[in-house]
Image (cartoon, rainbow, N blue to C red):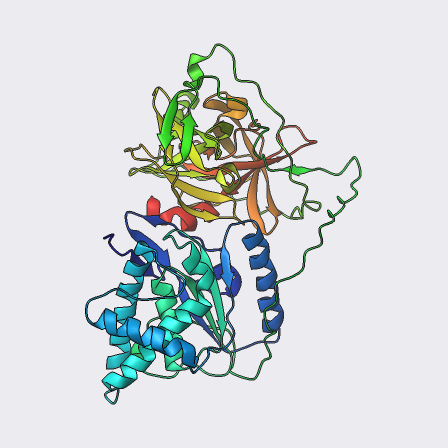
Length: 506
């Protein structure tokens, strides 16, 4: 029998519903970060915030990125026809058997459920001295019934890395609250909105979740959740003048066959890994990338004020271009493998952790089934299916391979970046492995609420996920996008976003 997943609750505390929804985690080495947060109080825009969250999550669920749940108030009684089923199951579990549920026979889930179930019942039993064995039994039956009904979609295809977002409104009774804690122990991220009062019970119970204050307690009508009806007709593209710059975020190229089919089975996928790019006399054929068509980029009107330069820090030394170029050994090429085992596109990645952690763009990996990671001067391709963490809005992701790496240090922000500052970009544009180019920071932009560095070092499709370095050889950004109609107008997500996202891997 498999071992249960170790759940680490609230490694950070998201300060809003929006930030909670952006968080994504994965399971690695039997451990998983999970978030259980309760917001206290209300404010004028809370109903609209929850409605926007519903729409956002429904859109992501349609894309297969998350499973979203917003349950109605829990039933206080089990239907008579169900009572016998759960009573028999509880009796069997009490005698050493496994949990019995209507909607799951999955061994891995039942192992996880057994551990969480025992913990919740122990907390319930010890939360007040008046709790009797009969009360514990009756509550156990409710937990099983609520798990079957509220988490039914989770049970159908449960796996530890699945991203489940559960938003509950005013589940403030002790039994309801402990059910949400059970859901968190089953690897669901839970956000509890308490508008009228905090949860009942002891401080020990409250400590099971992270509290965030968002206003005074009061009456607020939160709209009921309903799945939006999407029209099947395509939405017409927005009219755009020829002079309007188009932001492109490189997408997966049109499918092309791998030049050297070397089959290596991985589960249900037959992998065909191309030979090392440097072994070819010419780069592979390139298909034009598909450009994303957002609304006109919301460039910021002002950039950060200039900061006067001072002498370099005593422990840091400027590197020559040759020394920085040698750091290309810590930038990888990522081949994106589809469900048919073919390489459908490529991007770049940056070694950020010695234990196999590689930073890249989310848009590089989002459509892959697995990934073939190439390291400079190595013939072997390291095949992985592990996306450890990602953030769709920041367009960042971390994948993992089984190899010790030499990471590039991330800039610590001791001095603000300024326009005119020299930078070096390393990536694999158009499949040309680890090309190096230089330029300067030409501006600072805000696009889709994300702060970006504009720089002039040339990049092309395939550079996405590559490194943008300062003259000390430190990572200040990750190559992400560019302007189609402009020459050398390129964009990188900066170290201010990279540091909090990837800190635990550095």
